[in-house]
Image (spheres, rainbow, N blue to C red):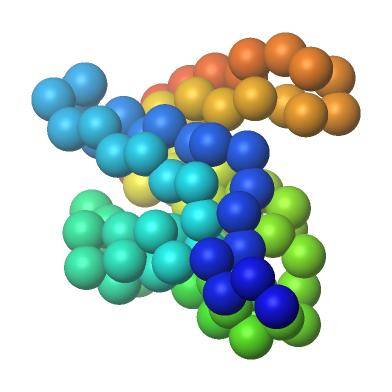
Length: 99
């Protein structure tokens, strides 16, 4: 089993573009979610943490983590830039309007 469990790269832009993070693996996601995430009390944040653990233990597909991180970023007011491998295009998910 590949403990890193990679997925399409996600670039997260926090703090009005001043802070950028790149995530390519479940291990990188875990590091960011547990130590550097801007808020740790949202429903999507908890889902991303749970999904990350499931990916690291081989219970869930890395693509589910990719989607969970994008949703958690939106919830946190961050922009997420990633490729949509199904469509072969770059996607930019905007900063959330509501916080």
